[in-house]
Amino acid sequence: MSIKLSRRSFLKGLSTVTFLTFQKINVSSTFEALGEILDIEPLIFNVHRKQLEIANYFNTPNRYDAYGVNQSDIKTKDDLIDYCDANSFLLRQVYEYSQQAFEDKMMEDQSIESLEGLIKNLDSNQFIGFTFGN
Image 1 (tube, rainbow, N blue to C red):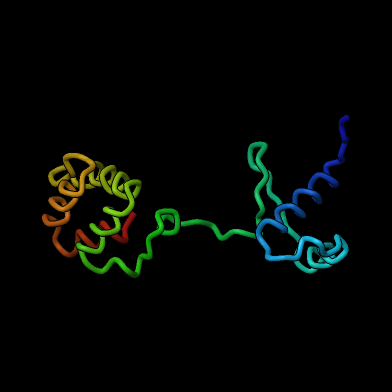
Image 2 (cartoon, rainbow, N blue to C red; image 1 turned 180 degrees about the horizontal axis):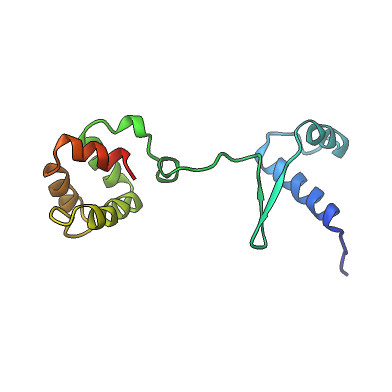
C-alpha cells in the first residue's frame, strides 16, 4: 500500500513532526491546537540542493557554537589549551590554521604538547589574532 501526498501535505506533515520533536507538547493534543500554534509562528523552509532546512528555527551557527566554545571564556593561553584538550576537532582546526598562518612557528603534529609549544611562542598580539581572528 502506498500513499500519495502533495508537496503541501508532505510539508505540513514534516512541519508537524518537526514541531513535536522540538517542543514539549502533549502528543494527545489535537492537530487543531498544533495548527493554531503553527498559524502564529509558521515554519519557513528553504531548499538547498534538494535538501530542506527550517529557515526560522535555528540560528546561523558560527565556529564557536560548532566547537562548543564560548569565545569570552578564552582569555589566556591555558584556556585555549584546555578547550583543545577537550575537543579533538577544535585541536585539528587549530593545527590546520597554524600550518597556514605561522610558517615559522607551526604545530608539528595534532597533539596537545605541540599546541602548547605553538601557544608558548606566540606574543600577546599574535595570540589575540590567533584566537579571535579568522
